[in-house]
Amino acid sequence: MTILHSARLRLEPMNDSHLDGLFEMNRDPAVMRYLTGKPDTLEDTLAMIERVKARWIEYGFSWWSFIELESNEIIGAGCTQRLGRTGHPRAAGVNND
Image 1 (cartoon, helix red, strand yellow):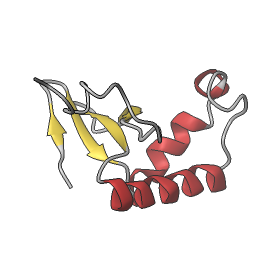
Image 2 (cartoon, one colour):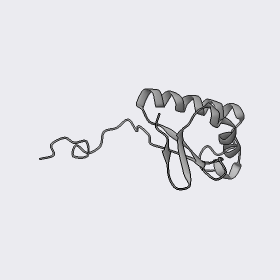
Image 3 (cartoon, one colour):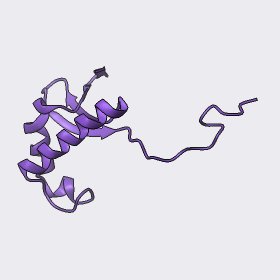
Image 4 (tube, one colour):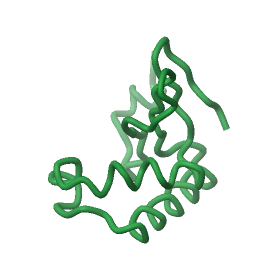
């Protein structure tokens, strides 16, 4: 899978090696307040990684771990999601006369 780089970050497809860093972030109530409303357990974070890995296999995209180059620590995460709905036909490349 593709790993992306910027001047300060490395974006890696979420995987098992990210468990400790993701759990550290996801167990923080301030981080999870608007996501699930409660801090994750280790099992919650592990289950999330398993779901994400399955989406990478099924769709070819999913969640990325954002890793700061200077510290090599996970400082965030982000994703491209499959919403399960179609967009405007022109956006999909249909009838683009």
